[in-house]
Length: 197
Image (cartoon, rainbow, N blue to C red; front, top):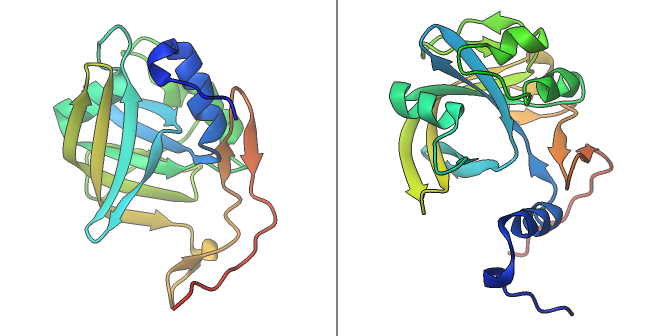
């Protein structure tokens, strides 16, 4: 085994090692509001925090110690919408990663369709099979380099055909996850294991 001390790695080396080993990572497409402009960006530093209360986390790396648009919008407005990225929408979602001025909407640029939210002022996108309206639970700034956003889900929107309303299980979603570099992964073969009692 090669021994690596993270203190001796550059930020870029650290990034490559982490994103190449912590895989696959779910991708959140996040919409947030900058005045009247609906911004959208994909993030693979995203996961579930808790089911009770329903919390999700989103880590937004800063640039030159300055908050990125998404983190700043969420800090100012206290609300955002998270969408599931899947095989049907991943190419358009990828277009939203293009650096645009905060006064331009990535939603418009990528040709995505706005849809009204029911509990927050931030719109979502119609192309997502699942979207979650969130309010800010907590924002933790770490070493002036990353903003860890914990959001509380206050409304789910799920396409009927993917939801079993008896037990709230989901099937057939075809989610896409992030690997290293520009590599993504489609959902593939699954298997089950029974937890020991």
